[in-house]
Length: 454
Image (cartoon, rainbow, N blue to C red; front, side, top):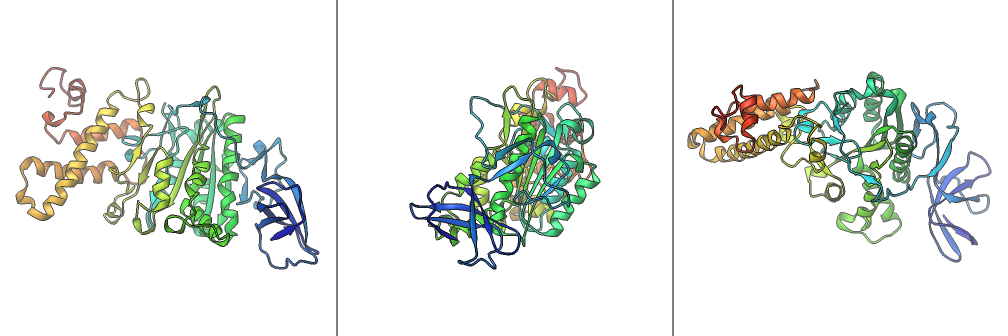
């Protein structure tokens, strides 16, 4: 909508569109000059005409009513209740754009979250305050993995989050452009895990307005920041699907006739995504944290696509799902080679987990990478063309995928994950365990230090 004669207006200001009959519709100022203001209509535009439509400018950008009554509630993508309950009675109002965390006040994440999934806990540890996306593809079980993390999550001290520290743990779930079936599966998981009382849900489904999809993660993160930094909650934010969000950004940019960038996405998509991802973190002196678990779908399984590519630059690692592992009925199908947690060392230092954790992870990774290379070589020269030591490493790669990664839907404690890793390493000669300390090799192989420790 083009509105003429508006003199005092600001970028991002919210607007009420008043029609002769019917409820007010929502809008937002996206551009203005000395004569005109351009208003993006957030609801349907049917029935809007020049003669009978009136515009009311609010004087402020989009804000959200905040209180602890958010917990257990469900909203649409623009923060309107959809659970049949009245609006939230606010303790405060905050703009959904958020306030950047002062780098001086930002605290390094150091408290691990044990997800119960060995491929994450053992090799790509998730920390409270981290942003660790799941790179999925069409048909892969990203939703099931995220739901499993919610069901099994523990603190690094072995304290189960959903039951033992329910008063200080919350989940904020934001759906952007997903189907009703996918959203229902998440909601059923919340109810099944007895976590609905500390969950805040924002739903923008595939048939909801596209422009609303751009607001959904900002409403969700505003709620998360309020719970974390005003009331001391450790908040886990699940954002799905970020590819749907970026497609909406491209659609809106095309409608506005903006200059396209790579694959027609707007050139400012990196900045836009950073304004969402960088809202995760911890603040020094405050007990709460915001941890992000974004889920995105890689079109055509292409990890170089702009959405996963830019996400990988901004976030502190990624969990990549493998179609080959999924075809081989390995669950969860996490490909540990391209997966990464850049903050892992901060959460497994002295006094946090077992002291052998870092060396064990490095050794498993090295052997598995070598076994994968030998698997490709075997397709050329055959098994007979491999040395006996190479055949053992190739068999190690198969066992690693089947036993360590493919744990199924049952969760493992961190101790069980590390024991499973040592169980695999005992299949190989001790002299090959070059990334482990001799005392660790002796301890977990059942020998005394100094006796053939390797």
